Image (cartoon, rainbow, N blue to C red; front, top):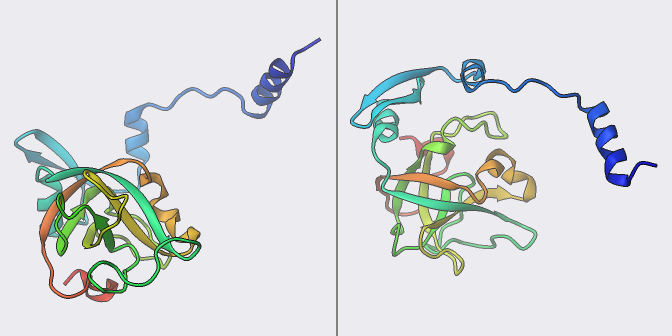
Length: 184
């Protein structure tokens, strides 16, 4: 008689037949993002071809920080009210940091978030605004604010609990800009 594990293994193999693994080169070739090589002091780096000049420079630059990311949202016990600057958090723009590591009012560029397709059809440009803090955000950690409700985290869920590369892209005054004016 088959054990439960053996029976499960038989069912699994019938439902999901073995497939030859795909090579890295084939996976990169199938990626819909068009890339161009850029030569840096560390060697060539692939960056998306549709970047602005400023974004391309930030992509090629050595990052200023490397931080483990987590996600937060409004509703359901997530973020409520204003950020630590007294501003309304902006979905997919506001980032909570430890101000001893990444000072508040720092505009940052997170290269991993460039090109993320957002629910409204726009594409993320990689810019975030350090305008929030939190008790659990200490040291090399950041919290990415995704919007209202758990589903707002879907576009960036793959970055949850991952280390991201962050480059300082300047400072900002007042509150973080909304999407319409963020790139200006």
